Length: 67
Image 1 (cartoon, one colour):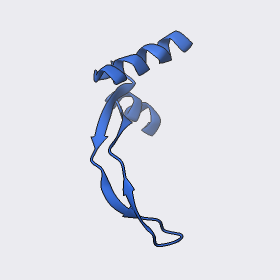
Image 2 (cartoon, helix red, strand yellow):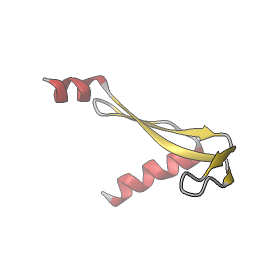
Image 3 (cartoon, helix red, strand yellow):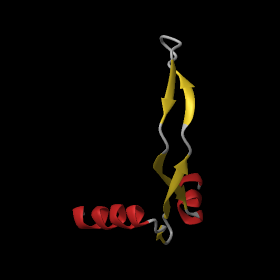
Image 4 (cartoon, helix red, strand yellow):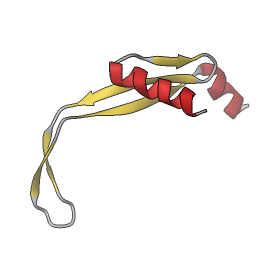
């Protein structure tokens, strides 16, 4: 299982989209940096640009869960 997850991680780092037929797909979304605010203190903070993994479930998975 570890090799499977590692290969998905490596593909995402390369910028590839990973699709598992009948289950869903993974891709990286890139977010720009922005000026935010700490909700506790109200202090202004700079949020750095970042990449986050994004999962989109496939049609078969959605149908299986909802039926």
